Image: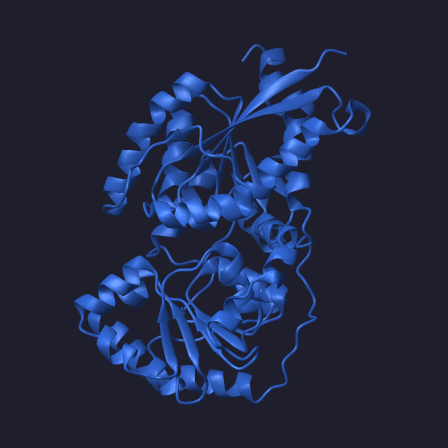
Length: 398
């Protein structure tokens, strides 16, 4: 039987995208290298194209993540940079359209909920290119979050929706997505963590920072709701200074957060706290190693809620909602009102008074093999095994 090669075009725009795309691209390479009889669809192979929109425009940090995760250099770099949500989405749309036309992929793969994800999906749909959305169906039920808009619209545009948890399946079904388009596969971000465990364990970042394993907390903040409003950020800064009296804090500063702290005159006060370390953003391996040895993590990040669940590290998410409730019901996560200093201090006190637990239950499918399942489902879909695939449409004369 002749081999059929299908072109997959992956789009990344921000660092969290890198951790999700890297294992999928690696799984597709392994698929190609496997003997035909060992492939679930023996006559299907893949050609992969990687597009980096440049939504995260810190090239130094992007290069670190590419190197550490084993991602190939992008075939196309669009360099869209920063701007308002509308400006950034529009720039990605304008920049990616000629690339999609020239490459003419059989399937566009987008991940997560950033502006690049929605922009690429919109252009692909207008061009009649099939779309797969990895990490589909996550919902915070907060329409004020720009990411929620990106999730909702990308899911409506997509032909294949890969979910990380059963709650996401239910969300999609409630929104009228046909069940045949929904594929529960587990969490590819955890695939990256598991694939690099040995390198993470070998990191020396904790020792370099002079920290005692289990004797410090990690802080990350970057969401506009926490850092863009002066009084809210001032409250959080005061709270962090008080927490530093209880446990040393390490705070890798997102570029947006550093800029706001400086703009609002808060950074000097934080820098004066001996037990509060403001450091530059870390690469993937060092950052996961730093979390792995922490007593707890305070964050407003979505991905960190997932990683701490697998690492068994208590996570206090400084938000009013989460699109990842499975990290609360089955993981180590807890929501804490970012505007309530007493609630944050109380939650930290509870964690510190509770024995540390590392070996906890993992959510279903968070086993390091989600990417293999994604690639297998894509192969079957492209080969015509599911309604709506290119092969299926051609048979119907679509």
